[in-house]
Amino acid sequence: MKTTAEIWETHKFEPFTPSIPIPPKGLYGGTSTEPQASQGMAQWIDTLDTYGEGMSILDYGCGAGIFFNFLSARLKNFTYKGVEPNTKFGQNRIALAKKSFGHDSRAEFGFIEKDLKKWLHEVDSVVAISVYTHLEPAASIASIDNVMTQGNNIEFTFSIFNRKVSHVVSSQPAYGPGYHGMSYWTIEWVENYSNSKGFTLTHESDFKAAGGHIHNIFKLTAL
Ligand SMILES: C[S@@+](CC[C@H](N)C(=O)[O-])C[C@H]1O[C@@H](n2cnc3c(N)ncnc32)[C@H](O)[C@@H]1O
Image 1 (tube, rainbow, N blue to C red):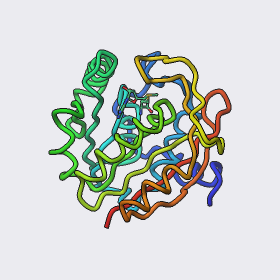
Image 2: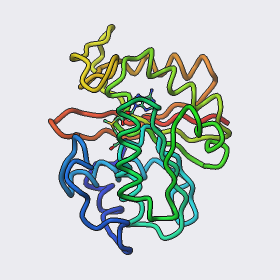
Image 3: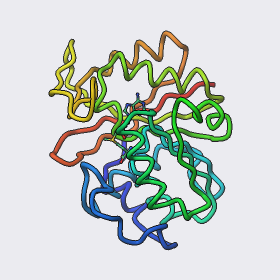
Image 4: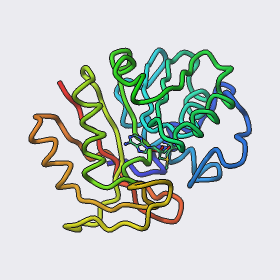
């Protein structure tokens, strides 16, 4: 497993201009500053076999689209689809993403309920960045299943907080019902899900996010 520093050595360069040079305040969510925000993002692209010019990717739970901005600083030609749940919070995030990146023809933003199925068949890989660290395991597994059973040879990278607990330890709902400031759950839950479906599960890397919490990054592949 590579360290954050090693991964950053490979992905820190910015040969092209990002879609927006200085992200507006609030766009980076919990990880608010550079280079910490981009170091976190680099951990995800390092998992992608499909990473490079011409790639296509779906950002599941894309928030305000900061992963798009990160990719736009490193690749010239790529296709990006960002989706959010059609909740009040999700609508707000998609509106902000469109305001920030709507001018860039490489990006499209939409909603899980309306756009996921169609877009899953148009991309090579899916990332869910800092999504399941906020949802309870049952909701997370349902959300992962939504991608894995509708996609087609999809590489799906996501992170969880793993504290080897046998039950969910979560703070109070932060952003909406069932959507917590943080949600800890076990690697065994992901393994059981993956085994039951016959998927391949790999533990790709770990990184420290804002507040010092360790995120474990996994990849699920359906072949
Ligand atoms: C902490 S934010 C991370 C946003 C973005 N990925 C980033 O790194 O900036 C978590 C996002 O997950 C979305 N979300 C909540 N429930 C979801 C679900 N069941 N499936 C996918 N995304 C979900 C939220 O609306 C929110 O925008």
